[in-house]
Length: 111
Image (tube, rainbow, N blue to C red; front, side, top):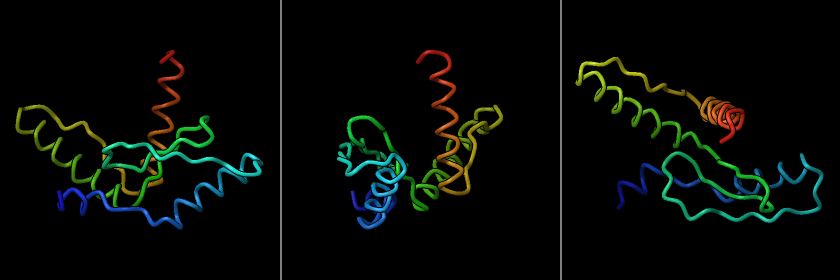
């Protein structure tokens, strides 16, 4: 359990508040209601804002954990005789851009 907590890390409350303020300002809201999802997620801190937007806050720590998982999955693929195909993202921004693009593709096909 301690290893999990260490790997997952925690995002400082002030940074989460800054994300909520940015959403409030970007969408010209007086205030926003943030509900954190009770999810065992190692790669982000998921939350729902105003029951309208699903937001994943991705930290540098999440990016490092993603790199470890990606390396492990690719090693498994290589050891079974296939080429690794899981992509590594060096920064939280790259992870977020990939997530956004994947979400758009799913929406485009009706999911």
